[in-house]
Image 1: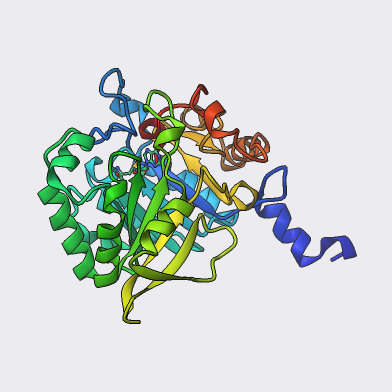
Image 2: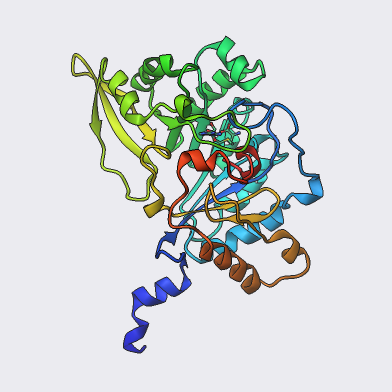
Length: 344
Ligand SMILES: C[S@@+](CC[C@H](N)C(=O)[O-])C[C@H]1O[C@@H](n2cnc3c(N)ncnc32)[C@H](O)[C@@H]1O
């Protein structure tokens, strides 16, 4: 080994590093662009053209890309969508990915409509961390925002997830002024009573999602509301974590069972420590959620590309990753795909 071949240099040579020296260890895979809800802030009411089955990556193709990336330092994979649980046999993909050597965490983000019967098998097959999305605890509002009457199924899914004791269980709630910002304390009460991390997400702009700056509730405003009832104590966070995490105590000093976090993509973005890559359901690598550039791997793989050629395309996508995403107002006008198409 020559002096220039120090272990760190060797590690960097293999790792997935972008032009700003950010090392990528986290891959989010969208397994379908279909969803069984129609959340107004995520997808337009009409006009979404779903991909045909043959346009989606097969489980074998997903596993191949994941395996190439895990060999290059990805340690965490999250399955998302669309709604990942509407993809048939998703638990079989979970089983296969969970066994990739070097992968430490397999996670999933779901709307929980189909979780009631599947939480157990997902855990058994290898899901360690589960994020559930729920923006309101009120049944009528749930129908209003999701355009589907499925609140009871979601609630059943949440109860099943709680009883399965996943290593990590999170409840994600997108906070929108005038829609659900009056429910912050109800969500925190839920975190106080249950072993769950409730995460409040600042509303982000995507194509046709009726975003405007007045609807964004910043984490500072959210904290002020929550501190009227609870004491929040900061928990030390991993530098690449996207959440600001807090433990809870009530006014009598009693500690809460769960925790609360804020995902501050709009008011305090975390681009400088971003370690994420995305794979869309139709096989494109995307190195930034908000940057439209995508490199399609599917067609090249189907034409017979070798693993080395696939890796080269992944590295090319990384080389396009911007240092930071554009300001929110500009993002709302950008040509990026909708959240449902990219995979949340
Ligand atoms: C697109 S969904 C896909 C996974 C799954 N169907 C679910 O509901 O969790 C992933 C996450 O993106 C969030 N999301 C979608 N559009 C958003 C937006 N405009 N701003 C902030 N979060 C958004 C959703 O609330 C959800 O937590």
